[in-house]
Image (cartoon, rainbow, N blue to C red; front, side, top):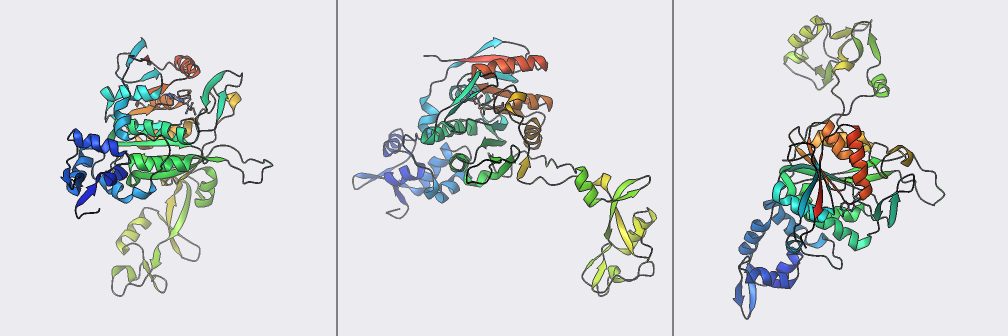
Length: 433
Ligand SMILES: C[S@@+](CC[C@H](N)C(=O)[O-])C[C@H]1O[C@@H](n2cnc3c(N)ncnc32)[C@H](O)[C@@H]1O
């Protein structure tokens, strides 16, 4: 700020990552209040904040973000400003081509997702609880099926790819509900740039996790490099701490069960035992006194009051060793599962086992949908491919919307939905020009 409390047009442009001309346009259209000082415009800081609030979907966090993150935005040629992205693409119509039910959702739209998302804003602004997308990864190659049928092309690279993603993310943010979240699947070559784009669009404060997904078996290639057997999933909320979160747990597998609950009761199943005392001495309290003729070991106290210990013992939940040492019984059947961490192993099937190249693992999608949506939620995948996300959303009784612009995706989805008796209304995007 060159004068206390005021910003120059240049500074506003830098903050918003738009051109000076765009800022002048905001001033001309009176969207942004400005004062003329020595022949040039100045914008009072309060007016600037008001402008951001009026134009921001995320409200306060965006201001904090803009103030904080001025220096870590990606800059590249032909980066459009948000205002232009929101306003420069005309909307077409979604033409119903096959009707299989009377619901508003559970639809697939064939078309370029930029235009389709724009059209969906009319009907679904702020209504989508979960977005999962698995876009092309800027690999520079084409993807074909096992029998060499062309599925989709992944030829956009560098800044063109980043801008392609950014435009869609801006529209997706508008479609997300206040409790919504987005998972973006990407590889580790371009993924870190996409993270910065997502910070810009959703706000650094709304970043939740960067999940490492183990995607295949270890690789044994000749290159002088570590084997790359993982990709990444970037997880953001529309509003941090308001996002739907169902705390799905990871089930205990047999290996872990053997390790953690090695003992077996003939009738009641597997269990382990834990000490009933903990570090720390009680001077006068109940937990420092004799229970069943025993004092807690030196420097320790009973974990429970003596009344509770007696209750546990009466219920058969205390195991006494042959030397008279009591320990609490914990049953494997009561284990609630493990907190899910940020490394997930869900390998994809090889090309010869899937309907569509790069088709994602169903169990992996199920974890995301269970955790971040509810039964009345709408799940959106606008890079739908084989329709895997839509199928799992259907299985879990969510509503869903799929979009893809590949004719092969369109026909694979039609065929596999028919096979699985999934009812879907099919639309095609029609441009108005
Ligand atoms: C990596 S694949 C998605 C695979 C999918 N997750 C699955 O499990 O089958 C990427 C998909 O994005 C689609 N796609 C690429 N650009 C698109 C665009 N502009 N509009 C709509 N779909 C697009 C491609 O046709 C392709 O099907």
